[in-house]
Length: 269
Image (tube, rainbow, N blue to C red; front, top):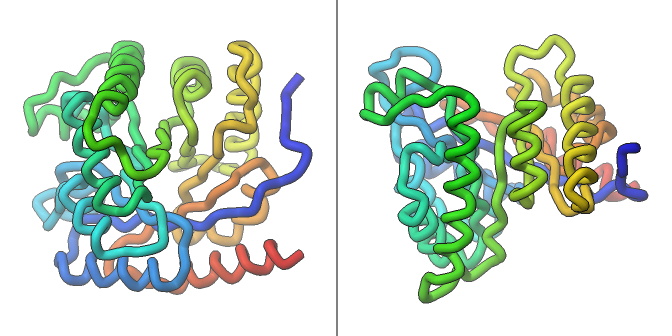
């Protein structure tokens, strides 16, 4: 039987900024403005080439951006949604995360995933393993990251929670149950994203039960595209604890404002 919380936690609202097809001053202005609006979280992705549009277009690297975001924002948690563990030695990634966490005053969330974009691996010289091997490598990386974080001096300033992204019903969700503080799901081209999230959410509960972990220990974040903001309450009813709207340039903040109004209205009920 699936375990579910007896009361729904307050809904959090975040924004992911696409680091592509834009100028750095516009990207920096966007994260400062969104932080001032009062979002709960700010994110960027970890890719090396644009994900849409001109593949030769402008694009910026994740962790150098996060270091800048750490010192230019004040309130929101910040993080990678998500970092591919194949792209960096896990001990180095732990050190990068610890340093950015210190720069932010303890606001970093370390979001990781197994990776999926084969072209990116090829262009930057990383081996592209099969799906099962990528999950094995993810779990080994997470174990090494945890170990290294416990040895670094100084230690992170904040809790530095670990988020794992992905929706694989067997390997990925099992890894989330074993290792993660947060889980992120994104419906991509799903015809019924709320129903699909609800199903995956229940499966994660079941994986937690199998290993004796309380499912309530894992936050459930959902990333949506701007046309999906109307589904926010449905996602929350299905178990999401945080909704993250994914924003392309030129960074129209209207969807963020809409979600923040909804968050505050729900909190007032």
